[in-house]
Length: 120
Length: 109
Image (cartoon, rainbow over all chains, first blue to last red; front, side):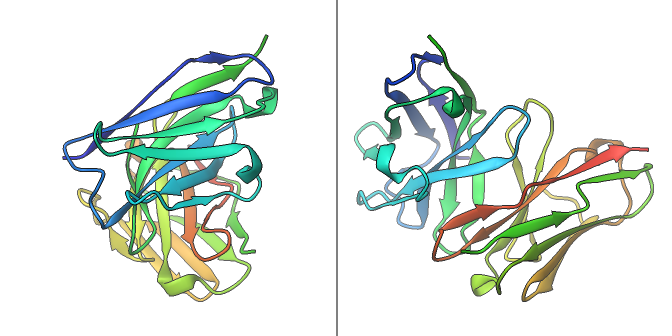
């Protein structure tokens, strides 16, 4: 079965770029029936969709984050990545990667999540 | 822009009781692309229901999704101790592509 795992620094300084990678195992990221997505959850709060990418490289971003956001895919490594620039303390959150069904638009499976803290 | 409003914010019930969680949308749902998730503390959300009423693999039949248009419901027919968690509804549409409700906390009474 498909599994996703986030990796990356747990601490990022303000104004720097937050970079995370999601490694997909048990299935190919080039499957045409899924998108690959990032979602975050601020401490004690609800879920916020960040964006997603198709294996072809097409991306769809949350308009509120679009100006700072880049999501990319590396099919050779079966990974996709998140870069969020100019971070502030408001970007402190648990970041999840997840697969999203092309038809139906539902998320599953999810990675376990990784806490990223923005602090000097 | 579609907005999802979940109610109540917190629901206090006892094991064995029936839970009814609501998700209202500000406009009609696109192609019935409405899903429900369960999240327990420290864990990632888990898909329960997609397409308004289809249970995900391995989800017990006490979880029932229903609704149409702008009003949707997740019913848990008989609460088990492991069902106490936070529940989110989620819509996939055109703009924005993905929207989550703010969540309903289901707590033990």
